[in-house]
Image (cartoon, rainbow, N blue to C red):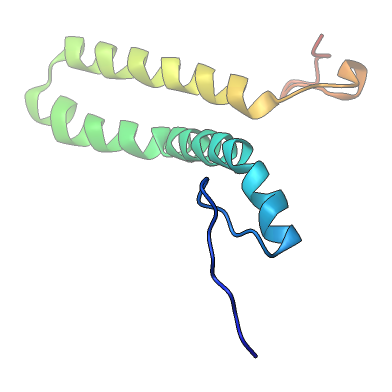
Length: 103
């Protein structure tokens, strides 16, 4: 079986239709990869917060450091919630942790 790996000017394979279709969605794949990376980094927020508290705050006993690290963590929690929501089609079916309706 002979495989022809000829590439055209844009760098995509010109013989396989699936390859052509996948190559046409390269920007969308990149956007999904970046979004996924950001969301996965935001999932590390609680772990990084605890590491910072034990490494910086507990050693120095500085309340200002605790305040700043806590505010940064709250900022990231807020963005994690916004990124994780996605499009809500039926807002009446979604309820928060306390059972309230999200609208």
